[in-house]
Image 1 (cartoon, one colour):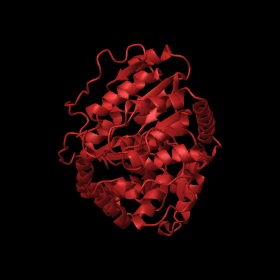
Image 2 (cartoon, one colour; image 1 turned 180 degrees about the vertical axis):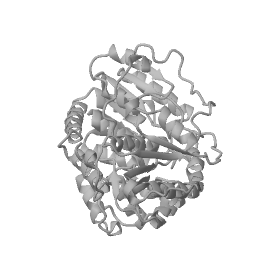
Image 3 (tube, helix red, strand yellow; image 1 turned 180 degrees about the horizontal axis):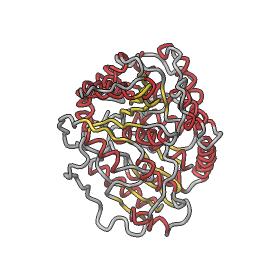
Image 4 (cartoon, helix red, strand yellow; image 1 turned 120 degrees about the vertical axis):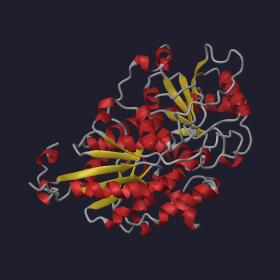
Length: 471
């Protein structure tokens, strides 16, 4: 009997699949993974498509229970070759240079992605691609596939997006703002700018945008983005904070929880500068002295910026003053579970570079921020936190960003946040906002309604899915 290939007809194709395409940098891998697990909780199949190396990184650092991720299909492309320069803590930090080779290497994923998409389009009635804004180039072939559509996941705040667009077009920020905003030219290296430019040239095929933010935090900014003429009245969903639903802590998971359990409520400042910042030795010494002199308890995550390959074991270990830490605080040298730390009752403040994930996690936990932005969207996020939301203070003004921040400046920022009346007011504001934002992500809350609306939109008009709708 001749064997013929069976091509699925519409009748036996599965209804909808979602393909998630992250940018290979930790903050982006993480947001896309959390978003994938939210979509998956609606019963939709999700394929998380990235290089084998970065899919492994995303899984290794997941801040959620494993069952949140067990439903996701990881689709591994071969890892494109790139050479990460070692982090140079003394260079002017703009867009993280040591991640750029891995980011630029993504351009070679366009062809394998197109082939994968073609295959998925044969199996499903509709393929929904959710891609990082900086992966537009890679997914552009979605435009030629009749049953595929794409949405960008914007991994920065709506406020930063507007600063970025205004700066790019040489226009003023379109809404009144309490203070002068950091100039867009100062954010990024030329290489990063030309990469961004390539992405925006190929982004016109998208059907909408998803922001990891909430209307409770950024309603006026989301409205400006909706009206922006280049948006062409495509839908925008502010369905964040995009967060894994439950984060169980096993005490064995990290030694810092044992230490935190012994501290008084809200007495500890958590200090961490994300995955794209490496401090030079003289700055580390000033920070150590400033923390010690503040006499405030601290939990400090001290590690170098990620390289393109986080499993490449060669990591610089910064020196600390003799006998540092001890009673006042604890220094952690490895990857730390930040959302769980921020949610711990002993934590009363967060000294942060203001990457958007850190801002969102802090807002969600109701913890006030001492903002110390370094590059990219961080200065505008810091302005949002300190001037607009009033849930933080600034450690060092952006205009003074050149040179080392002295111990005395750091000490006074820590005391201002953790041990002053002004600090108490800011912490109250942060707690109130946190409670409201947490409620917004629960059933019936504004963020959850937007998430439901996104899911309803991408599963529209494909019948035979009663079990999805009954959720």
